[in-house]
Image (cartoon, rainbow, N blue to C red):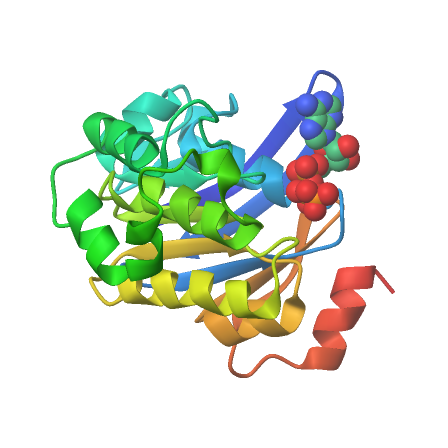
Length: 230
Ligand SMILES: Nc1ncnc2c1ncn2[C@@H]1O[C@H](COP(=O)(O)OP(=O)(O)OP(=O)(O)O)[C@@H](O)[C@H]1O
């Protein structure tokens, strides 16, 4: 479904990614693991079309992503849940979700299905998104992505700063969406969680993939070494 071949990415003269190869198959969940500044967000931005990269280096269903806008990627079924949530503060929960739905693809996921799945969110649907707890805001951010009916969902640090209960809620929603065959790429700072949620993982260090494989068989010692670069 998604193919990344020898991807390099730059911020001006600074090279942030070096020859990254990566695959995501239909229905698969992969985790990107790495220390701060390793290049995970840069990779996500390249996948969603938000960063200019060589057009042949990222292919979604055989079509180049490079040179496409985030909007075009959304229309093709690739949606990012950005780090920091980026909800519209002047809109209610429902308005935030409905606006995203309006810009997304038609499909099964809409505001009504989400409120059915998340009764606690339904109760606060008319509140301003800024009045919600961090965990609830993150559920809104994921909901906004789900109602675009993506085939590939990219999640950047969706558990950051949340309570353990809220983290479980966030992953419960994600796993519910995965049951419909959605593919997922996760950036997750909690390595245990990253391995527990994913089918496969890629460990990135200083812009390079240094270790990858099935998450279930991951050697935690090797992952820790790859993560810290020892
Ligand atoms: N807009 C930018 N301009 C210049 N350099 C940048 C920019 N964004 C990121 N970088 C640099 O690119 C490298 C990779 O950053 P990136 O944000 O992709 O890492 P990350 O693995 O997502 O880190 P974190 O976990 O802190 O979010 C870092 O050295 C960072 O300083």
